[in-house]
Length: 201
Length: 230
Image (cartoon, rainbow over all chains, first blue to last red; front, top):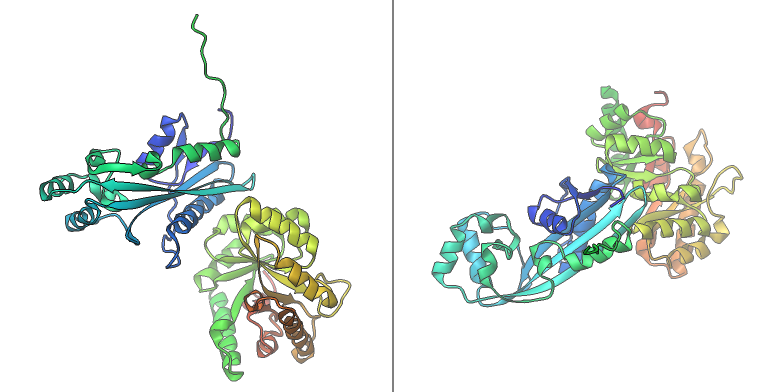
């Protein structure tokens, strides 16, 4: 790939892995921005705005790089679930999600300062949890997994056993909607598709 | 350099007293520190002393200084004459552009803002004293231009700006400030939303007291904060 480097304005190792899985090498420079937004914003507008904020912040510092910023939130019955800070909160969150559907929203922005370009997109996925027993909740919250994840679970980890159904993008729940993102990166010419077929001689 | 802090406090107090004496809410009046040709170190001191908005006049100079100080360290306003070919940089570096004075410039700013998905806040600059040497839209073109600007997707019109001639006696500037208020009335009467006419950027070091009395919401003060010399 012959282009400017790609900077990921996020600490999330999941996002980095998703990009590396697509053969994209990224440098991580987390954007520490104020994440409080205007109250009453729709989830899609909210994650878009936050991803733009993170992206712009790093664009200003890394003027010759493509910058990717993203934000993911989990919403249940109109209530945004953050990252549980302790076991009590994690148990409460999983109780809320048990046997019901919730939505995961990820917004992302890709921008380049010198090229003066930016594109933003957001994707929603519906996730349905199985009905959880008390033992299951206690076991899962006894692991390390829930504590740095919005909504208190990781679909790509042990938390996979919680998820009965999913409607929409899977990678979106992990932290980046890869299908849409690749389309955006191609549209901006951050990446090009070259024929990767090798002759079988 | 505690004198910057002292100067800033004196200006703030002056704004406060003026606002109170004419029955205005001091919070409606924003102080913009004009930092053109002032070094980074001095600007940092002003920010540390509580200045939250900086005004810059030259794109190249401003870019270097903002990169050194930090885009998020303060709100940055562009208050100098803007050429269309510099619109892109103005959009990238500034929260508010005070000096939009033509359809052509508005169109270019809209285009550049669209590229980075920004809604660029702008003011319409009026050549209030009809001086050949000053930029600004002609007074009789203001209503038409304001209405056209409202049609741009990536521009958010916030109000009007003017720069009257310099007078030794600030009272002489009063009639020009009154005229800007009058132009705002005409624009509102033509159906432009009041939110797009909320700001009046007028008044500088020597005449901001008069400007506040006449309704200024933004005063651009350089000398009274930073002194006249470096």
